[in-house]
Length: 303
Image (cartoon, rainbow, N blue to C red; front, side):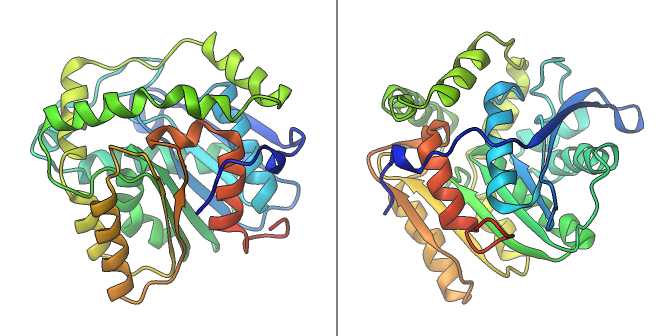
């Protein structure tokens, strides 16, 4: 069990984070961030959550992750959800409306691969994979391909959603319940001037945009237990799981089931609960710092 502790937050890390606009093979543009520590020990591929803008707030997170792990952190916008507002290709959307994520993940990986190239990122002989919320599903669906780039030393899933069957109405109700818990999450950032400044700067940035039909397609993917099915199809060296104790989108009984399935397979790794917070816990910087240590504390030189 972790409780948000403001004493965990360090001064702002002096890590270079570069933003790139990607257009692989003539695909629609997406933004990416690459955070590079002084002596990279490997790569952390980070899949963000729904409605994530790669502005000052994500830059702060990536800088911290790179500083704390000595891994180069690579993250892209989610296809169909970018500041450019380009839709998900129709053929991929049709698959998603059937609850299938594979084609969407393959499209996302085209951008991740491009980010590695334009960011001049090497040393993929050591890979960690991190997903939050929607990003958990994309991360798991990407594992077969990522495993071809280098051995995956660890999978880190923060608030996975697609671990149970539910209808779109229930998914939306759970999402609204968790949004109502956001003020408590943001309150944990108070007292850290640089963290609050990054959050405020983000609020002045344009949001990502997406179409209603793409929103429905993403919802159909998240309303399945596709993440469980994806995990069942791959070899796993280590998996860290994280849930907020008050989360509605990642419910306790479903989380416990995921934990039990991994235990039955003999997959090591911590199963962590963040006390008092809901699905939006990834917006608490003290929690992010504590989770980085709990999930990735044995990685690189800084852990």
